[in-house]
Image (tube, rainbow, N blue to C red; front, top):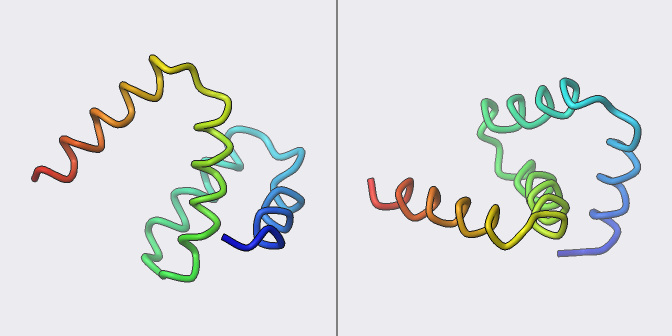
Length: 69
């Protein structure tokens, strides 16, 4: 992923509330447009880097179930 994308997403979201970030995520998912996926990837990367190994394990288990369906 291009670091300019990471920087732009970070700058655009900096200082926003949890509710505003949730709205961004939900809007990106509901649109289903592939050009929004890098932005969601930046969100995921930020979350992953700040999560405990327990949280990461729980998340990947949820993903495993989601992709099994």
